[in-house]
Image 1 (cartoon, rainbow, N blue to C red):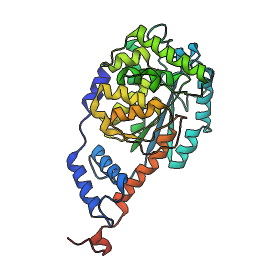
Image 2 (image 1 turned 90 degrees about the vertical axis):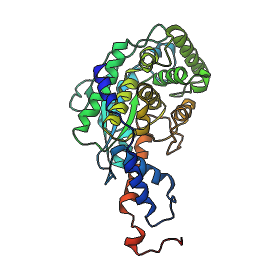
Image 3 (image 1 turned 45 degrees about the vertical axis):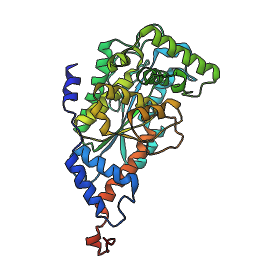
Image 4 (image 1 turned 30 degrees about the vertical axis):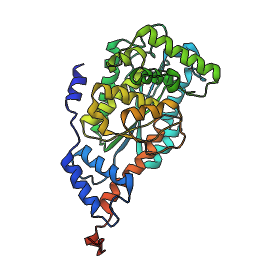
Length: 353
């Protein structure tokens, strides 16, 4: 836990003084005050996060982490676990949805193997290998991972983030791939938020009614057997989580520690945000919800965290796709702060007092 404790100790509240400076600048731009709505709020938030008025968002990084899940043995997914490795190859070849949308916004995609069951061959130059194990264990039969593995997964996310930070990083986004991971995300949400398990459990890859029933049943059994402590995020991660989810929680914590905005993607990324928030609540102020997808638990997670999504496009792919699209909006907000003229510089009369 030393590395996690060290990162958490660096997370501070947003810089209120700089946010006030940003607000004053926004109020003097050539527009009615507040007329650019959430763009103004984003510019102010980014200012508070980095502790200065932002000049640009240049280095954009999407972290797309992959791992397999033992709970797929319960028939909770419409796809076999082999698809996880196949999609990793697709990411590395640049052919996936996240690759297209990352190119669109000028972001680089960092793909990492946190626990893919199959061995990914001959990709070390492109793939970050931080494998904790060959997928989690079946949570219906016992804990998904040990507490030590949960710690290692979070630490791996911190390490990957800091490796990319050294290369230049102005904004980060979360993404993932892992057959069975909506079951893990649903279990995390059900434990931490509470309420009816069926309310947070969706169809994931597109399971039919029978598949959805198996999914809800598996989560019920896993929670009853493992008894995760909702007040201990590490315990929840270990008992019903996933290696990629833990690593994304590490990315979120590291982003907050290093004063970088972190854009949260879909439902699985949202479950990672729940884990990160449980470890250190101050990290929430560094998060920006890229979108809300059609998985029912996604909106519930965002509401619990107090995050308002930027987009609602009925997405359910994951990978970081919604977060990548949102980066373009966040960049626009920073450009508003920097490129719009003030009333004085433009020679435009302000409203009457």
